[in-house]
Length: 231
Image (cartoon, rainbow, N blue to C red):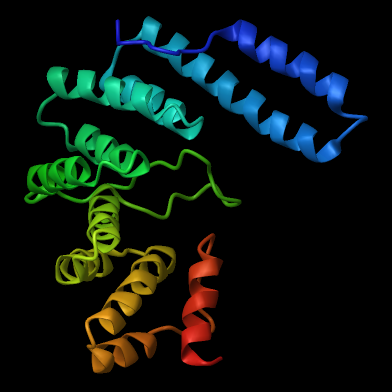
């Protein structure tokens, strides 16, 4: 049984649904927020039920992810730490715990975890990472290794360690298997190049951004990059 501080049960879902129905006629914006909360809590309930029935590595990861989506970062970290004890060679626990250490502003711990995840996956085939919130087409656009280096680069960027951030995002760019992943990495890499005064590299990178890129969800990154182009 995983550690379960602040885990929510089905009664919370029922309560939120009742509250949603009560508030709907008063404030529709608030009701939309409550719908999101109800869904999140319901999915945590489902993940917890799944884990109790089958305490598999995948079910433990999803339980942690759902807790994190609801903002319960400490609970998610505890779950991932439990996973690391049970599955120390599974890079996904380090990847997700590192991500949530970023959310908690524990940057040194995040870097340690993400570097560990990078090491564990170094000689492995890259794998598609399922989305917590599927896009409109239901097609995941990111990968395990891509997300490891994306978040590693982000952490270095937040610490203003731009040379290390550059290396991470250049690696992330090479790992991009579709336009969505490419523009996500390119956005940060462009800014980093500018911070480092590597203007020629920044301009060269912008030239790879086209109007007709086949995007599913990362339109905002593409729009920003087009803005940098002056388009």
